[in-house]
Length: 302
Image 1: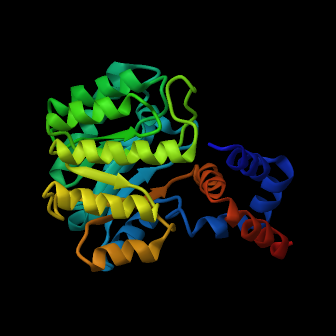
Image 2: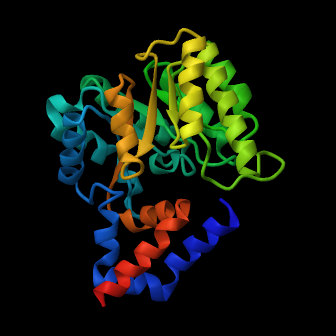
């Protein structure tokens, strides 16, 4: 995260701005553009709306700090609530929400429970990656689950240097791989610093995944990376059913629809849950130009 992004995030989380935003209802109203809501019903409604637009969906639960152990149960109930509409849905889950740092064995059991539920509903799981300190633990967690669930995907952030090697190694084994630029702090010795370096690393990761036969999930809103991914797919004879684009709910929705309209798979990352405010600050920090609109919304509510 750049200095500007960090400064924006600190401002949004400052006591004065946060209390005004929550008390006035401005934060909740603003969050509707990026978060499905707090409840399973909210998430189901958004997923069904996306399906009518021809878009695929990825569900992610935002637990409160004391609710992380409930993540698996909530996501399984969401699949039940979706019924037939669960088919083709991706469940995106963070290792921390599975309790990886507390117990690898418990996290493994929860992940395998989630995999069984997704398989029963014709859905799939993609495990997220959270920084460098848990990298090996996440690889081990994913590897253990994949022995029982070969459709489970893994997220590899391109801003971590070793991801380029891991992409090639895992793709050769047929793993579904989500490539993203990365959003967690990375030590300078382990990652790339400039936006240009990160973008180039992401292109190399996408190329490595496609060249080695992985089902590739290109998680990017960058028009240049999207165009390059299309070209890499053509060069490697990857059909449009052999990869997909992924973007956040509320970010470049017209581009998501456009990709679907011209025959590509486009999936929308749909977060829901009680920790929506924390997620909202992350989204605004990632797009600093939205800060003015956010502060204006707070002012207008006073």
